[in-house]
Image 1: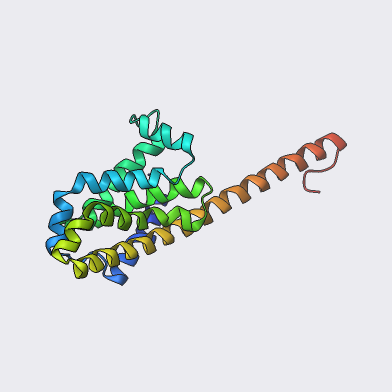
Image 2: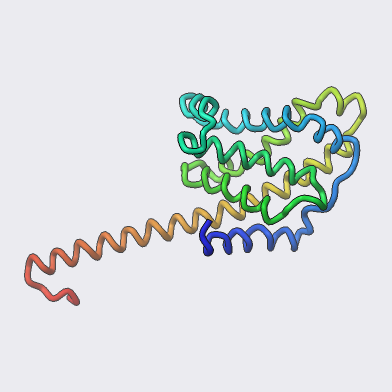
Length: 201
């Protein structure tokens, strides 16, 4: 990650963490259940994210685990793994590291021309994964208040993702604008050379 990009991540993500005081420690039976069922929840969340891609892309990302041959799938799997650990980690979670992994996934989906809602919607899919995997335990133990607290934290994570998405789209716009300007400048330069006009014309 380049210096300018890292500074952008810090501003868009860590600044909001401070202002929202996001990352307060969550405790309770549901956290214990999430820790005990970590693999099942992460696997389901990952599958739900892959479901947002076309069938052929989904099949490829699920079948290829190598970062070289499947960088998108590998980045998503690594990212959701770290984001989940941040969610249940409380005060022990590394906020700066979490922001980096969140930014990676958002950037992948932003450049793939997903809409804003689809680009950040992967965060909300964690709610679905938790409810599907732990539905029986939540109902049996009546962990509704714990669930609301967890889902509130997921909502805050989605807000951070939206900030990152907006910043990424702005950067893409600036890159494309610069490419158009450079292309136009080269065409004008060639025209000036062909017709003997001064380049300052």
